[in-house]
Length: 128
Image (tube, rainbow, N blue to C red; front, side, top):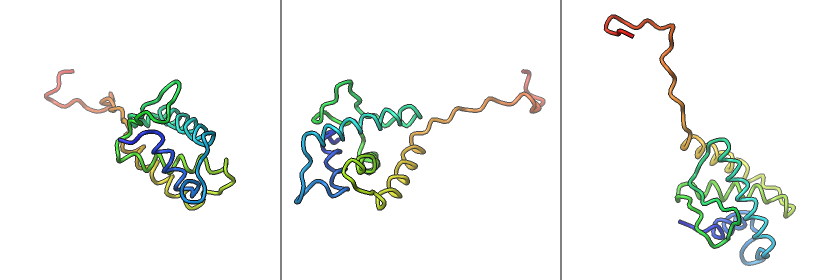
């Protein structure tokens, strides 16, 4: 399980902001952490609950709570969200972000069972 800062670093790496040429500043990390928390909160509102460790006052070094299968989807979607802050156009990541979000949202979807319709015949053996 990765920490929040590791997820943020991978998002910056996907944008080619982190690494050999440029390192994110503490302000950049704070921006990404806030965006990460907001993104996960938005997803929770539409029942995409990933087990993320949401905090009122987020710390970069705390555990994310994400299982390994969800990490890439969160990293790519975070990268797409923070790209405009750096004047980057994440066109190459948009398809990947959309596909990964679709996969995790379908994986964690909670479908309500449909009640038995009243207009259907009950059958001989049913006494309802």
